[in-house]
Image (cartoon, rainbow, N blue to C red; front, side, top):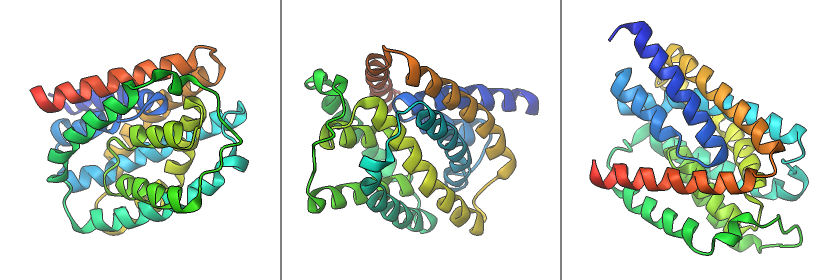
Length: 252
């Protein structure tokens, strides 16, 4: 395979990953596979390099969601702080501990996520409940753990985020995706600096992947912001992503 062919695969794969991340999550399963299996990066280097595309994609989608009224920071900014703090803690661990062993546990977490998405599907299609006020001692530990996971290994973070925000904090699935993009963009910028300091980012390959991820995320966010079917499509994409991930983890 020529270098040009590898880069083409990287951009196209990243484009799909950006779209999947914007509507559901787990797009990093695609980008991390490309970085390790196609482009030949070691796992820790791939983990750091992957964050470049995650940041550019989430920044672009956050802006689109905000312009179209899907990102309401007034009601959701309280969720940002515990996730951000947890993400930095998780990234510190990722810089010192390989996450390869964790991936063997990840497949069982995927089964849990799939069950959570399939049970009572109407909960995924409701409007945001702006009157719901969860107690801080409930959502702070939960969101800190969520951020810690995202900082440690990005793969699957989006799905976990949606489960907590839609089922736990009662956000609409599209508004949950908008908040997800904003929060991940914030903490990923700091994590990129941390990985770069440790020499664990390939900026050339990360930049190539970021092209596809940003375009895919931007276009998908525009569609999700304007389509009346966005809620249903996001829900079904979430199911498909999880089913494919479970099949891949258990049967390949």
